Length: 117
Image (tube, rainbow, N blue to C red):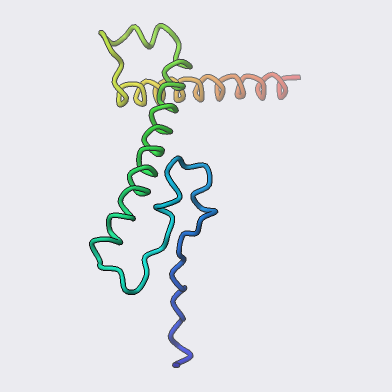
């Protein structure tokens, strides 16, 4: 092989330990065999993939719910009705930027007081 060409990393296959903690039967853990038709192996892939995606969506939704709970009430009241996920994220960003600016102002005041002594 030419030394100037870098070797591509080998494809890593998922193993049983990669799926520990996921809720689905061990039946779908088997790796497709060489003789298995493409459609059959595709079906055994779909169920774990759907479950992994569902877990990912659930984690995202849980984090957004936690962010919503952390928002101050006055920000929640700026919107009418139900807070959509995008609105929760926008309000969280707005609040974080305000907190960052406030922290920076306080830091500048502390430096000014220290330098004034």
